Length: 119
Image 1: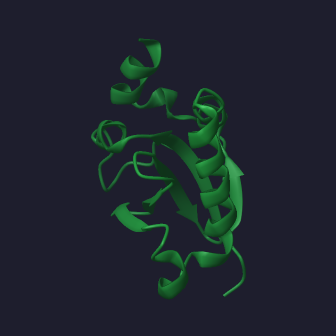
Image 2: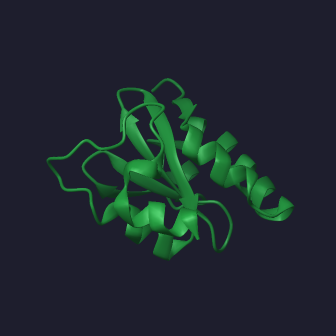
């Protein structure tokens, strides 16, 4: 299996920039591992990659930080970074039939997340 391509949504970039330096480093390190580890259970067990809905997945970037990504073919678009509750709010408006987050589209369109981002 070839390495996974990684794209970053603009919303994800702004969320990660707002993280404290130590958490920023954890996200950067986990992102670097994701490309080679996805689809290889023994490698990705440390990242805790888990399928959430349809083609949405999450991985751990440290103890309190989760990253949600959408898988399309051999490309993962990172759509949000936050804690466990942020992930739940992000996914709540998604149904198995919806396709709210596409390549390069931020989480701003997701109702639950926009309230948190504004506060």
